[in-house]
Image (cartoon, rainbow, N blue to C red; front, side, top):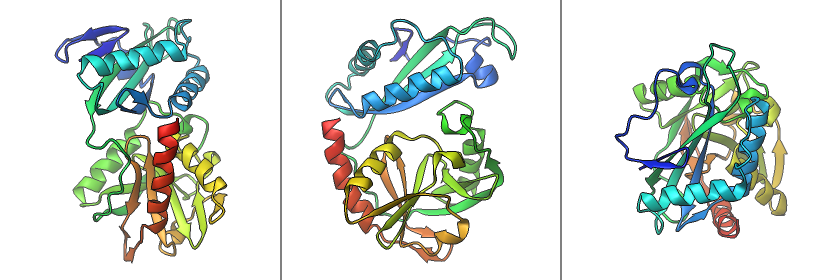
Length: 281
């Protein structure tokens, strides 16, 4: 069941057409949200990111787009899909709902909510083989727009195809300065000793929700030193650990990059702290 502007529709319902600006121009934003037993993880952070992103893209924010209203719509979507007592993934897409060519006639919006069941109630650590490679055919152009979760994700799509064709679990993306920015589906963290590094937003990485939570956790943990700094590809093989974060999977350890194999001790320690934070969010 799909929530389209507050109306619950069957999955087979045809409710979009060729005028959709998300389809024609990538004129859309989305949030992927983890919901467990009707509890929305990090909802305030998701909401504030969405509102800030809509303002940056000059979308008109409807008066009823309050935290409370959208929360009710998410829970309604979860309920109608029979997932109120299950872990679920919500994809919440907002697109400019108007005619026009590159320049829209107006800035009003519409939205779609989709729900799918997840396997685990808690964030879990998958320590099976997870090999990555650099994707070097195209790069992320660092700037404010690259930090937003827009539907303009063609680099992520083709790098995903490259990974699949070459039997990699994921790829790491570079910016125009050849710094490591992020993975296909999340932010990247590098561990060397007790120092944990992640690229700054200025390098063009996504302003990830789980990235934000991990930064808070690391800053409060005396055992670790946090650095938001550019990461060179040469640093990858010198690291003790690499891991990827996103709002659905939590923390995904990388087991191998080229000839280097990695541990997952710090990722495992942070995972416990992340689960505790999620329950309190």
